[in-house]
Image 1 (cartoon, helix red, strand yellow):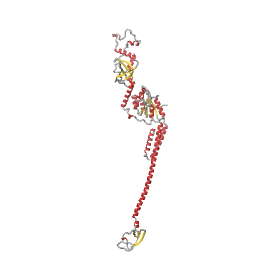
Image 2 (image 1 turned 120 degrees about the vertical axis):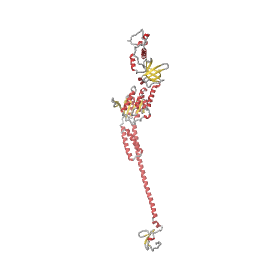
Image 3 (image 1 turned 90 degrees about the vertical axis):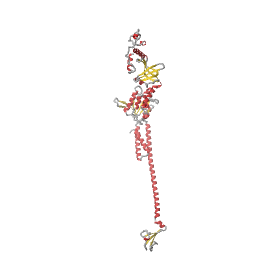
Image 4 (image 1 turned 180 degrees about the horizontal axis):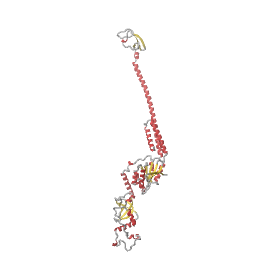
Length: 431
Length: 69
């Protein structure tokens, strides 16, 4: 028993709650342990330590003996009970009681064992705890050293999820406005997953089927087990430092709750949030929603769906090109047709305008003709008037223009009558 | 030019043509460019392939990309 105690003492972190261990006393043992005593120790049939007042054992010796007995009698086991008086001490360890209606036992979870426990239990929680029974000599108490705890109804995992979620939310990592759109045509897609998992196989199959024009770069990481969290974080960090990916898919195929647990780890979630390029999270099957899913820019229900969300198929792109081609040619045709129509309109306008011009000119001409006609002496003559002209054709309109015996022409409606002034009088008188 | 840029350019050309407010000569030039871009994009599409690789980091912090089957 002594070597076991020594090794246990070495693993046990220093606690200010715990008094320094006494040096191992010589191992006294109650009667019950007699048969377990090493053969090298001589059997003293007549007396044993503590049999008489003179041979009284020390408290330490008694307590040590009790500890050896208890630790030797129980292998690690599961215990059911209700949590009370939970305290997370500032030394990093957790202390609480497990009780039922008639009994209670003090429990401790060393800080190094807490990573196996999803979250600290709350008072009043019904739990089963796995651990080993021991004796805390400094207080003379039995103590249950707990290694794992599971709460009824998965209470601890729920609590752990809620806590992680709340912390991420407080840091704004779940905000919808943080979500980045995926690149429409990623050339390089990094996939953070395990090399031998179904996820990688499914993603590659989808991309090949769609003949997507991409380079898929696998960044291997364990996705379950103790090292998964750190490997996932390291792989995501590696993608950032490499810097050549347009998009990251992080995930794994379906599995038990325990198997998916790394994707609920706050460190992994923060590593996803820290990705320089958009992220798609694909963890397990449709129903499994992980913390990682909440932080990623896009949550895909399965790895296959992630591959589909990330890329566009050959057929889809061909369709897009066809549509563009159609739009271009039809709009170009429409444009030409519109220009031709405009030209035709113009032609008609010009024709109409020129016709109008001719008509107007004709009208103007008629007007002018009419006015000319009105002003012309011809019309006057037609009404019976006559005009006298000298031999140069100048109009003789005053008496003074006439001299006696002067010849002149008298112009009438249908000709010229050669005439002569007979005699001039003061009154104008022409014949 | 990347496929994505070609598509964006084609989209812009189609929109300009659809607006109908272009000189005929400009429209023709755009249409010609569009046809050229379409042909290039289709060629690129025909050459599309999916490659699967693996990222490995050297101790020096530099990276190797290794082909996988």
